[in-house]
Image (tube, rainbow, N blue to C red; front, side, top):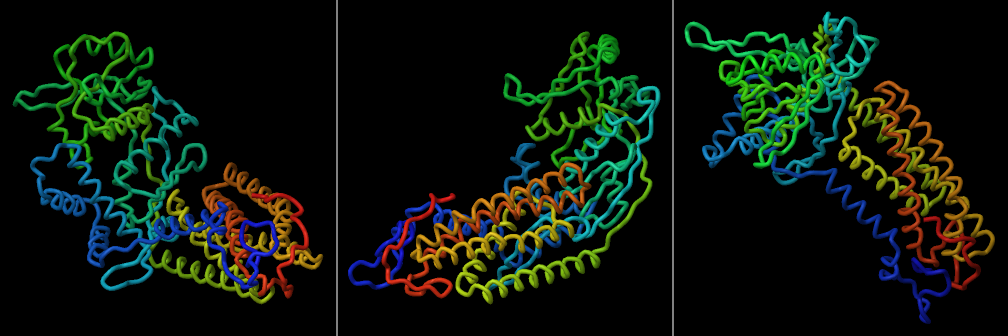
Length: 528
């Protein structure tokens, strides 16, 4: 047969026997790349853990709010060496438990093997996974914010994004809906009240001064300095290696801050976001107001610049920076509408999507085998690689799959075989001209490449337009379709080509068999 990587001619030596030259197989980058992609895709997409671990994750995912927090804290406190952990180690342990809860709420079980569960955890959107959807409206807050502008809405959107992400709620969607409204989708959160509690109802950054009460307690008094006076904050590592947050006020705010710090030298100022201290405890939540020490004013700060120091981890410092910057616009918000998407609807949608996907793949595979025979079977194997690799990329990015996104993926499956059909038809033409097997395959790929490239580029351009100008649902469709188109080019050019070159010449292609004689040369160099 013709061995992979040769330009034609006799491959089996004087004996004339058919064999696969494995050494030649690995000389080219394409087969090696195909194997690497397959191994990476399988290891990334599929996970195997003991059944008890999955049950534990699912138990955590069944909890929410205060019960979940208590369970997480109990588990962390039982860990060996908890008493010796610093704040960073405690926060990491707590974060790991919350991640386990999120994992249990978003896994797709593929099967069970000897006490272990085989699963993947593609991220599913609200329409597939169920959850809550809220419609929010921003309210003007004169005199600081007399009207709702694009800048105001951008600030509100960022605040809500940061608040949700800091609480470990993943796959969320926050998008504009008109001049002063936002739509917030929280997959996995079935209780609308829990969703409202996580989002809050205001987005207000305030600076307050500490006041001692007559009974020796502490209260915080409004200092008439809010996020409207704030300019920006930046987290940095200090000279001693500790994280600190440098901040700056606008011109008018700087004057207010200068007068405030001059009056409160040796005393304390509190920084509050949505009525809660910006400092967080080891569980990642704002510390109680009664335990909040505030920030000591060591000297008057007249240039509108200051610094917040404390026992911050890098994550806490960056989070505080984001919250300070996001809270720079004190705009209250109200919840106009709340809606819950049930798990039954989501599960029904998943089942129908899976059936549609399986039927679509099966139909394409049967068609290819019926029309092209052995090359069609090779195209089917490339299609399986395409499906595995695409899903693995969806998981890695990660892509949040909605019904529209799955539709884009299923559509890309049909488009994935287009390149194979073009290649096969060009190869048949080359064989009809008397080319040997290797030369016919190479010429077929070379001649088909321009059409394949132009077609896929046009599809990617259309996807780019949909991503830029489309709504969230349309964007999900465009993203999955674009990824599918890109992967289909790789599988057609590399996987299909590699496997075609492994066909012995005695078997032939499309009814043509060969005696190993060199008939012609490739029309052009490899396209890839």
